Length: 270
Image 1: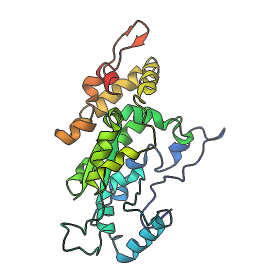
Image 2: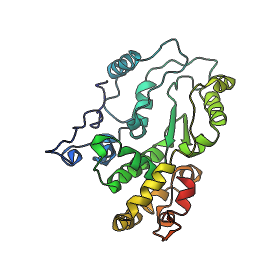
Image 3: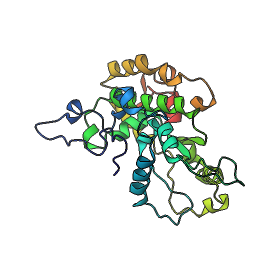
Image 4: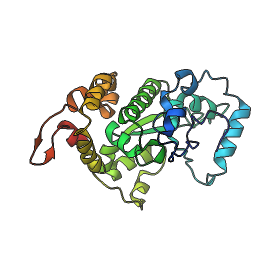
C-alpha cells in the first residue's frame, strides 16, 4: 500500500504447494518471522534517513486514500508498526504546527499497542497458509522480538498506551472509555460500539497447545530455555502486563482426568 518504508515481506508471502511445503524457509520476512531479520533492516527510528517532507507527503497520501478525512481520528493498524513506532512518530509529526492553546498539539501521532499471549498468538498464525508448517518456536521468537523492540521504544514515544488483549476482553467498555479519553474523544461515545467482543478466545489455543505438547515435549523444553528469561527482560509494570514467565508458567506436567495440565498458570492466562 505504501512505498516509503520496507514491507518486511508482509503481504508478499509465497503460498506453499506440493513442491514447496515450507515456503517460509526460502523467504525473508513475512508473517510469523518479519522481526527475525537484522535489526538494522526492520527497527527504524527517528534517526532514519527516510524521514523527509517528501516521504511524509507520500505516506499520508497513501494512507489518506483509505481514510475518511472527516473523522477526528485516523487509524493505521499494521502489526509491524510496533517495530518502527519511533520512525513513524518522527515522520508523521514532522513540521506539524502547534496550536497555542494546546500542549504538545504538534504531536499528532498516538500509539496504542495491543498484545496477546505469545502461544495464542503463535497458534493463531498457523491459520495462515504461509505459517501452517512454520515451527511454533519460530513464531514465538518473532513475538518476543516484536515485544522487545516495542518495550524498548516506548520510552521514546510521547503518547503511548499498552493494552493486553486478554484484559480488554473482560471489560471492553471500560477499556474503550479509557482509550477514547486518551485520544481526545468523548468517552461516553465508547458505549455506542456495535461490535461484539468475545471473551476467552484463547481457550481453543490452550487445548490445541496441550494436544501439540503430547508429541513435542522437546520443543516445549526448548521454548523454556530460549525464552524463559527474555519475556521478563524488563521487570516493570509495563512488562508485567504483557510478559509471561515461560520458565515458570510452561512446565511440563502430567495428564489428569483427560485434561492436559502442562500449562498450569498459563491455563488461567491464555
